[in-house]
Length: 276
Length: 248
Image 1 (cartoon, helix red, strand yellow):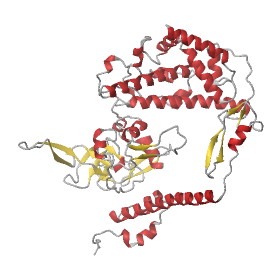
Image 2 (cartoon, rainbow over the protein chains, first blue to last red; image 1 turned 90 degrees about the horizontal axis):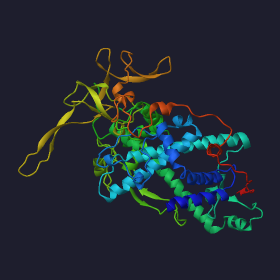
Image 3 (cartoon, rainbow over the protein chains, first blue to last red; image 1 turned 30 degrees about the horizontal axis):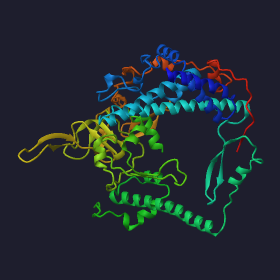
Image 4 (cartoon, chains in turn green, purple; image 1 turned 180 degrees about the vertical axis):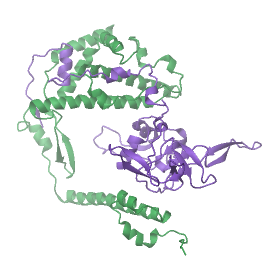
C-alpha cells in the first residue's frame, strides 16, 4: 500500500515538473519515463485491454510472482515460443498498441532475467534461453519503428530529424571521435565553462610522434590482413589445384592470383598427374 | 556478403534460433575493459576463430571442442560461390564406400561446406568402452564436402548432375541441372524447423500473439510524434512552454 502511495506521489510531482514536448529526443525520453511512472497507476486497465487484444494472456495478478515464469514451466527442458516481432509487423500497429506491447515485452524480459538468475542460483538449467534474444530483438525493432515515426514528423515539421545532434571532433591526441551534443540552458558563446572544457587543440612534438606511431599501427593491421588473405589463397591453391579461380578472384579481390599461380609456393607436395 | 544474404533467404536454419542467440551462446570473452570508466578505451579480448564441426555452436559439445584458451589448426575450405544444397535434396555420393549411391540430405553445415546424407557414408563409433567392457557400436554418418564429395540428382532421369543458379522469366532464382536444363526445386523439407514442419502447421502457444492480431492494421497516419499521440490518448495535457535550450 505504501508503495502505491509513493508511486502516486511521484506521479504527482512528476506532473508538476513535467516540461512540454520539444523537438529533441532527449526530452522525449524524459517524457517517456514520466509516462511509464504514470502507467503504473492505471495498470489494471492496461492488463484487461491486453487480454482482450490477446497480445498477452497472463492472468491479471499483481504480486511479485509476476517476476517468475508459470510454475508449470519450471521443470521443463524447453519452453516453446514463437519468433520475435518483425519490423514490418510493428509498422502497421498504432502508437497505442506499440506502447502497450513495449510494456508487455519489458515485463517478459524482467521475468526471463529473473528466471535466468534464479536458475543459476539454484544450479538449474534455464529452459530456452533464446527467449531473451527474441524479446531483445522485438524491443529493438519496436524502438526503431517509434524512431522512424518521430523522425518523419520532425522532418516534415522542422526539416530536421529531431535526433540528438552529433559531429566529428578531434581530441587532445589528434584522434577523431563522434561528439554527441548536449542540451544547455546557456548559448555556447556565454557558456564559459563549456568553452574552456572544449578549447583543446592538438599539436606539439609528443602528439606528432604519437600520431606517427598510431598510424603505423593502423597500417600494420591493414598490411597483416592483406598478407593473411594472400597466404590463405596460397594454401587453398596448394591443397586443391583444381580449384575454381573465378570464385577466388571474386572473393579475394586484393590478392593477385595470377602472380600466386606462378609462385612455387602454390605448388602442392605431390607428383602432378600427366595425361599421356 | 552476397553469399550470406543469399543463405539467409534460402537456407532455413533448422534450430530456428535467432542469429543473436547463436552468436551469444558460442561467445568466449577472455577479458573486457570495465564499462563506464573514462580511463579505459573499450577493448574486448575474445575468441575469434572457432572450429565448426557437426556439433552446433549452441551446444555443450561445441564448447568442449572449442575449449577456452585452446587454439585449433585452421581448416582451409574450398570457396563456394552460391550455396546449392538444402535439406531434403537427393544427392549422389562420389567418394567412399557408398560411392555412386543416392540419398537424402538430412543436415547442412555451411560453415564447413558439409552435408550429411541419410544412411550413407557411415562408420561405426565405439561408445562407453572401458576395462572389461568393449563398449557399444553406434552407426554414425560422416559429413560430405559439397565441393567434391557429392552432386545433386537430376529429377528427370535420377542421374547425378552439376547444377547452376539461373533466373526464370518471372525473375525467380532457381536451380537448374547443367546436363538436361531441368529445374531442381528446393525441397519443402528445407523449411522444416525444430518448432514446426511447415510455418502454417505451427501450434500457437500461450504467450504467442495470434496471427490475426499480428496482421491487423491499426496504424492511422497522424501529424504527431509517438509521445504526443500517447499523451493525447491518455489525456495528459501540457500548457507550459519550455524554456529555450541550446544543443552543442
